[in-house]
Image 1 (spheres, helix red, strand yellow):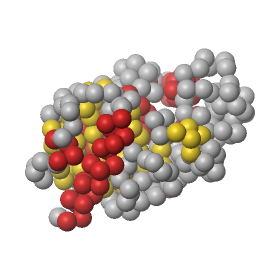
Image 2: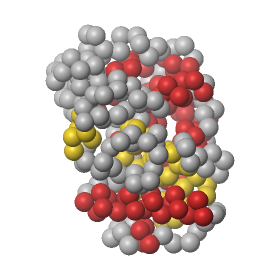
Image 3: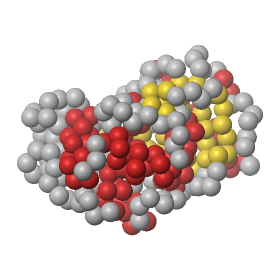
Image 4: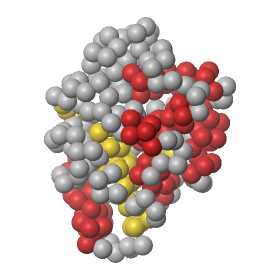
Length: 273
């Protein structure tokens, strides 16, 4: 494991932790790594729990869920028509018409999964994801759109699963990390309007977005999520790498400025090893 300091990490004006992994093991871990809020990096973990339910035949991606005309697939891909935090009885668009990033959609999805599985959400996530992946620090109470707490070590374990799935079949993994409802425009929070705001099933996909929070050299197939707590998890399947970041300051201009360079340094270090 590489423990040499990263300039982009040590120069940040707040405490933080970063890690890099391949499909087998952690390649680098730096910084103090207590349990921190994940905010929207909760969503990829929640999405994985939904996909486990799909793989077990408890949920179907194309069954009705949410507003009339919407499905589980729409909710995962932020195309059900809900606003960011709008009431569940208010829509900003027809299902499938626009990509509108939505906490509400994930919370409605959570209610659907509870009914389909017969588990309360924390128990389902513990059973389907936390236990099997050995996520010893992950806390999954509250909204599964934004309230999970965990460590970089937890996120790296999720990254390994997303590089080499063990909880879901390979064909479902490929579907989840492929663009759903291609060509839809929308706002990528913190980075503005995207002509093609590519998303998979709970995972944001880099595609041709510019600017972006991942490394400039990241492959277009890179997927993951970042959160307003100043958190990220990205997975670059072409390189076989995943990285995670957590810090003590909420997302802001310093993250926009430093995250791409930090991720570039992580990729360069792995490729030089």
